[in-house]
Image (cartoon, rainbow, N blue to C red; front, side):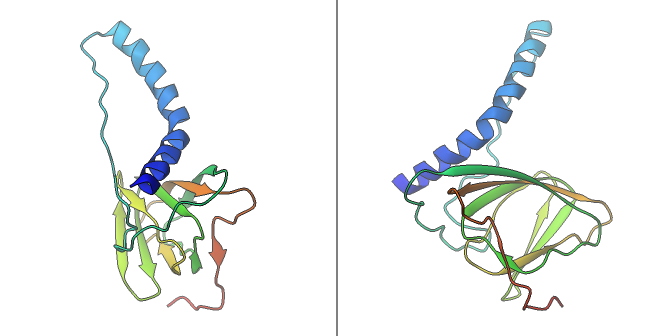
Length: 156
């Protein structure tokens, strides 16, 4: 349980800056219009990746929090890779299909959160007609790669 709490705490710190900026704008809007209320919606809370596998133990040492915006053009496929660190994201536009090396697929829709596989080879595809915009948040450590490519595995 402590490991999950540490992960949630670290993830919260990554999102904190964005939430603070949004909160300041909302606070001003509430002064202008007292009928507006702050709405909080939890998008995901889990200790498993999208394929149902338990997340690994929390890293030892000082964490490095990384946020990355990805834009996948329509029809684009991302090569086979794995993540040595825990990460999750929010899909803000489009639809992304994630395919595991075992053939298992997960379609992430606009507005949904996803917890990526850790140390499991997979790739992503934008099978839609508009660009996918995906924000990913990584719990890493200094010097660690966020993704390790596997070019020797051919795409279908």
